[in-house]
Length: 216
Image (cartoon, rainbow, N blue to C red; front, side, top):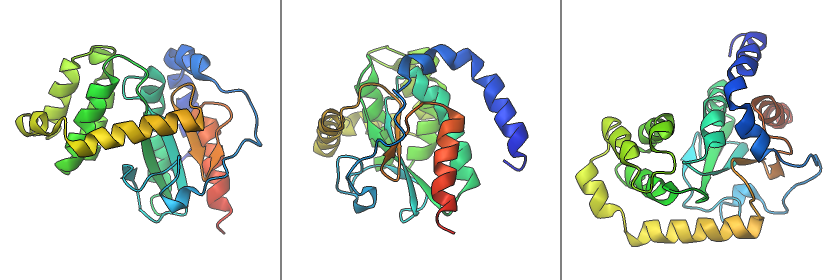
């Protein structure tokens, strides 16, 4: 992101194929909407102490994404979230919370959690998201398994881990928090407890930047 103007221009162009997905998941605009929970406590409906974290654990700015791996809007936003993390490697972390709104979502989440057990979470997440068009709404998510394997997942071990009590607890708690936070669509983002009022790369970048700038 050395050239912010160029990057944002590319964002605008590349978002055209995904505009329908973003329109479907757009939130009512309410810039004052925040949560009373402290996301840094890591034991709230926004962030649990078990939640997957990408970036520094103690980063001062936390992006929480309520994320359905089978959601086209989540896939569309994913590269831009990664760009933000790359621009602020010391100041921003991403916390993922799972949402199961689509066919195949639960199986995909279980794949991701077995990847976390095997310490290959990030590459498997990248591969599963990238391959989503091949397995979207497939209850058996065959292509997701293939992508995970190519990213380093031990599939035989993962199938043994798939129904572990720990994964069951994560799914149950995340879906309980989805209800308590009243998540209606994915992706839904919070930045340091403030809900992103309108879905889009520029809107997310601006909210994150404002929180990073406030650190100085």
